Amino acid sequence: MSIVHTGHQVHITSEQMKHYQEQGYIIFENLFSGEEMDRICGIIDGFDEASEKALRAKGKESISRSGQINFTANLNFLSAELQQFIADQRFVDITTTILGPDIKLYWDQSVYKRPEADKDFPWHQDNGYVPTEPIHYVTCWLALEDATVDNGCIWVQPRTHLDGFVEHVKTDLGWVCYFGEEKGIPVELKKGSMVVFHSLLFHRSTPNLSKTQTRKGYVVQYSVDGSFNPNTGQLFKNGPLIAKDGKSAYEAFVTRENCS
Image (spheres, one colour):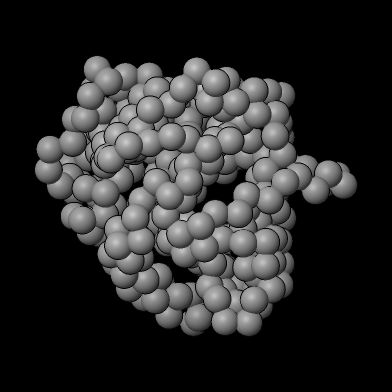
């Protein structure tokens, strides 16, 4: 199901909101222009290149694997333009409609899957990586270039968010919540399109079978303001406040040190 949007605002209908609540995700077709994606991708490419260069010396770090898949996190603190982008009115409209009036950036990272990367990134819930209270936050998976079945787009299992949190098992490829035979459904996205899904929805990505194309995604996650890790009691301080009382609240660049 796709979203109808006009200009730099997004209106989510009651039918579309029902789809999110029941199925766990919504697709936004052509949410951002090609020119916007070229600009954002140009910034992120530089950070990915530097992080991949450092990764090559190690071979593997956490869930990143050199020459296969690379996660580069907290990019909003590295670029004023990226931080302004994650506070765009379109993100404000989407997140306040789904989560409520006061919204903060929860996490952001690029995810680049290299050509001929031959492994799945396994089924998981985003909550499986870090416990979060409130448990529901949203993941925005934005296609910087076309994401296809051939180059390793993400797949989802609709309605799995309704079962609550599932215990995860740690593997060499990351945390895994499902080892069954259900294949799920692919979420192919054109450049500038985005899927938004519930943090408890089962999702994975498949191998990049293309010979030359890196699958490039920018993952931007949002929670209600004041969300925290229930195991430590610590507030998440990974980015700025983007909405207050349902309206845009972002004013200027916030450094990691000044993030409250």
